[in-house]
Image (tube, rainbow, N blue to C red):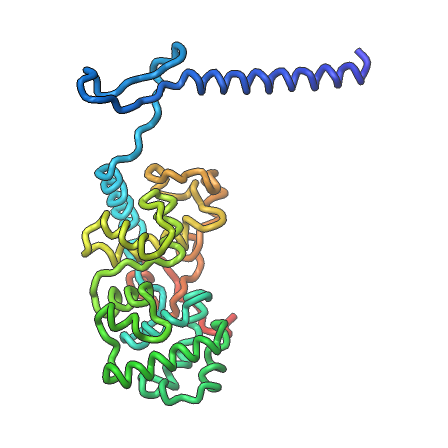
Length: 318
């Protein structure tokens, strides 16, 4: 057979196979049995409409609220076993340091904040000190965190507010914290949960991404996500739940390329397959202690070190 005729024949065969696959898919779609609720008195809880002999196919029912609660809580239990050392990844020694560090963490990494705050707190250890500081000197210290002028204004402003309105002490109430310059609900719950032991859900970018992937909520606004997820768990779980989810988002369930093939909760995840599913390739995507790399804190908890985690290097090291 001449080369041109052979090529034409090959193309025809490919087109024929493609057409057959499309026809088979259309037929399968038509054969699918749909379940519809029926009116009372019909003698059956559901009615089935079908166009051919595919009697077993049914449209999957939406997950009930009870099933969602059970799955969500099981995910949290699994994450607690995977990350028994989960903790806030900002270095702090008191509520003042935590609220300042959290404000500084906007649009930068916790690592960069942790590398920057030692110099800041060494020079300005109290709200009174920071409120009375020279803005240009504070800006120079905060330069590595990015947006340093705006952040200088925020941390000096909140320090001044602490001095003038709260006697130099960080308040332990949500309604008071959100009045401070640069402090929103996310920052307030970080402080309440980790400095005061009061439950709160921290809806950061990792938390938002994962709870939507897990179909815990379809909400996109942080306050609605907070309310929807909070309704799935007892209040006493909220703070550690936040740590578990954020740890998982940073280490395994990444934004651009989740390590699905190395994810211990894959069987519970509706989004499995969005990322790399090959176990060996997925393993190379793991970060921090899961990938054998340093964490974000210069002074991490002992439990983290005991689990094989390594402290991050100080600014300028390496």
